[in-house]
Length: 143
Image 1 (spheres, helix red, strand yellow):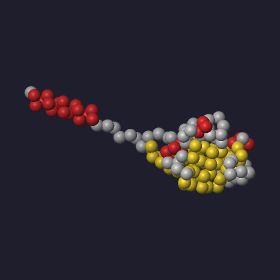
Image 2: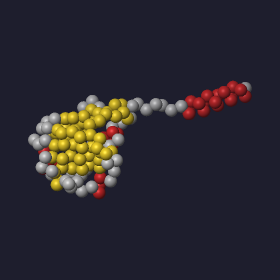
Image 3: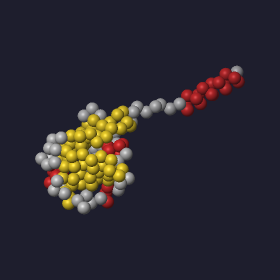
Image 4: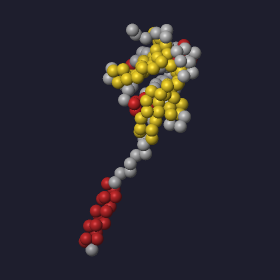
């Protein structure tokens, strides 16, 4: 009887100790140029340039792909800042942490680092759109 009770307790402990593996999904992050101007995007990690791409009108380019339980914007790609610069030296600087203190950030809480404003999901491929309004509201970037 004691052995049966001991085995039952061990089985209960073992079953409670087991964890479910998270469902990992592959996400792709792209930038789309929805303006009538060309711009350049530069992604950095700890001050080092990781990605540099030029986007023409209507063009979309993949910035990165990562695997996670849920979509977390560009934050899932090990990047900490992004510069979007139009050929008139205006644009945006988007920072992963402390973006509220950043005077060059997108308007209306739009950020490439978080899900929401600016992203469209097309089958786990998330597209961040830079719009004509973004171009018109862009800031003179520091040199």
